[in-house]
Image 1 (cartoon, rainbow, N blue to C red):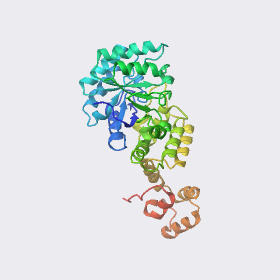
Image 2: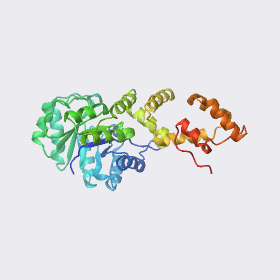
Image 3: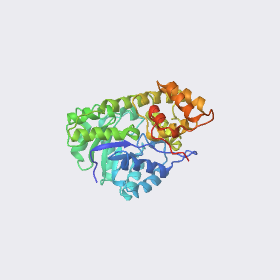
Image 4: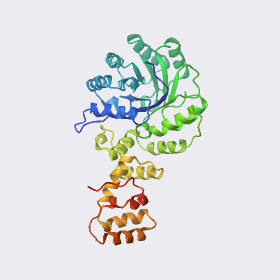
Length: 357
């Protein structure tokens, strides 16, 4: 199956405490993005998935698991290797598991001309011709920026295999005029590209947390509805871009589930100060996942009355009236559960009342 237009997440990889790849949770995360979070597809083992730091042995085990997933027709695979032969080996293993869509970047480290890039991809296609390739244009990571000319030559000579471009250098989205799909690598380019007819969706790291918004923008465009979410979507992206995307995304996801907390060195989570600043900025956009809201609500529900009053005082103008009401109704100064008082939860804006057990 060829690559389809739409919203794709460059899916994160999840690691165990010993830094080995948590294959089951990595696949489950990608499946959730497709089944529940609005993604048309996900990229496994891309740069956001830290594929360059993962062994071939672990990659193959993950591919085995991906091949048995109900979402395998929505998966695109990266390879994360500079070795042409190793890439071909991983591609062949993927094909044996029924996955034939790949996001491929030129090798990093050395500089080379367009002719070298052409030869590199021609060699891959000649060795494994039954594949669909998304060319990954990201000079910042690999040191090479695709030219229009080399892509035109690759598409001309291999039209059945070169089917799309992910443009994270943004020199192609407005200059390519070919019958292939173009996916910018950022939400900042999504609506602009859709409206100009130059792009067909996005492949984005930030879609790990904001794909529902991007999907709604995508659907509203195709249904000719008024756009109301693009400014918010772009603001979220700009906040996440202030640090390494892997650090920002894993830190954000870790607040929701600790399984995301392991990041392979030399990468790391954000510092506590950076994380706090990021979350303050996201909260100002009312971007706060429900599960985190629920966690906050449960913690608040168990606060002693005196401390609870201080928290309320910071967030509600009518604190005195609220506290006075609580004192009258409770007539105690011991620990209480705010979940018994739905009006408090409404004023605090932390979600639905928790059921008292």
